[in-house]
Length: 500
Image (tube, rainbow, N blue to C red):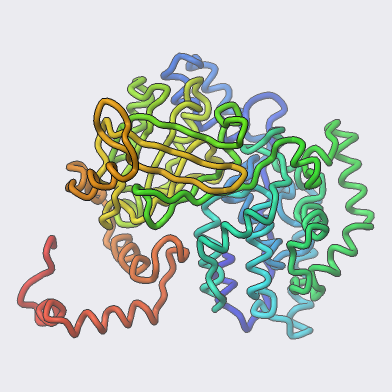
């Protein structure tokens, strides 16, 4: 929806977030519930317990999950872009406060039409920067690293790159403590009651990391909106309601920068490089289990690889206890060219909720759910089926993973295949001399339209440019290709491309 509205720069448009599902009064959140299969097969739950928990996961219909996954993060980003009315993201879906927000949104849309305010006036480079900053402050889903550049592309704006994301995450501390990141695992509706996006922005304003002149759909600037929010009756009423009904201090849900630092909240994402990921990768470093991080804020894991080419095979290995503490689980061929870049939440959730899971790392060219946590490195580039080194890993290879949660730096390297690990230089030589993994292949059921999407987004810059269609770039590449001898042969229909 945000991408569609972003392309309608000459029209008014307001986003009405779907809100969030309320948590059960007794039971487990919707993220943990998705691990009942793995926990059952590992003997941690009976079949009756699993069935009972699954039936009680959601206390209300509609809305996004009770954790800050991709749906919740997208709501937060929409508000940060100025595309919603104030204090809209993460409202309890279907409740009176959510219904009133919908009515406010309709009035805002009418006002935009009457005043000549358009989406193009809201979505600016400053708005994109604010969205990235609020994403960092909330500890949002890594999937928005794809979505925000795609929104920028649709709006005709500058696309943020890896360097921009790294800069923002160094400047902006994480301030929100909700599921799945913690350290206090509150459901996301409590973040709404604690003040939501505008409350977080008040802290960010004091840090000087917001573009306050950016417009919002109300017609006011972000700065004017925050001036209103700071002394509003709504703010004080919501925060008092949280204290009275839940017994929760709102300042323990949305922290000040000082309290966040004291509580050990770290910045959201890190972008590791290395001989496995020469183009980069991403890890939600703030969600690594703190007990596995040393006193200097560094996560270090040197372990043997166990390589899989399908998520189903990797899940089977977890359920049959073929994955043990100390392993590095590697899932390859699951990027855009292999599957359309599938989500691998079943792996990350199983590892999080199994007792040994925090001692297993995951590397993949696929993506994760927004609720994924742990030492899980995704978006590895180049992807395996595009010739990336990750596609030449084998069972038993030594992998060295180093993530500095304070400096937001990291490396993932193959460091040998002998009895003991060697170093990145030796690993690079071994990888360069190898052929791709023998099991590496596109999904046999991959639809033609997904294959076409994968090729076109690769021609447009790939995952780090939001998996978009850059028409000028695609046309340029097609025209250049058609002028080559190979292109002429294909165009003439004398032969088909190799592999077809």
